[in-house]
Length: 266
Image 1 (cartoon, rainbow, N blue to C red):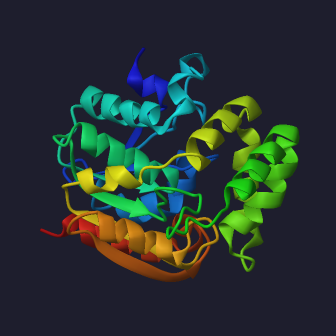
Image 2: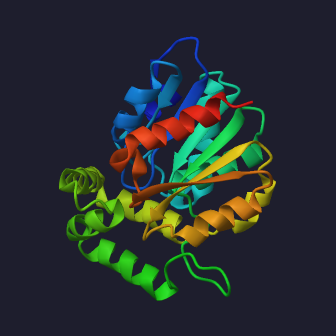
């Protein structure tokens, strides 16, 4: 299957600039990067795509077995980089896509030169001294709610995830993005996301990495960003003075600037 159509790949921006690959999180699609893309495209070549099962990806590519773990999505990222013959890219992963980047660079470090992990979480469930933000009971309740009433869950959760009450249009946009996703496929993706544990994979990252967290984020609390930073050798941690889990929508100027500065750094 052609990777470009499978993942609805788009390439925009400067033809000669460094290449930045933007990977969206659960329930989203590439359009949610538009505010950051507009700020990056004058100086960078920007590659956008939709994960299989999301956005305008090819429905025929869906395989519940492959996409029941984050490794399936990470393998797609590597397929995409090989198909486009891209090397030395800056991979920017939002939320769960951050761990896809971690898995991809661990499997093949020849394609990705730098990682930007935007509001990442290597594990959402509290475990001993680790605080992921949720108990296992919380996660089970979340997944049960999705399965019983996905559209209702989407409407209820979007404002909490966005965390920008002063910009209600963003919560509505996120809810609409959730609602456009096939509920069955969303549930597979949600289980792959919220039941994942990639803490042990962080030590295998040996490329320059920037961890970006928000000052208040109910999905990936402050301690999670510090954990990722502490467990990726030589990484940098940046805290944006904003709230919510989607700063590329709620604080696009600051997010784009952080990505651009890191991408240009030597």
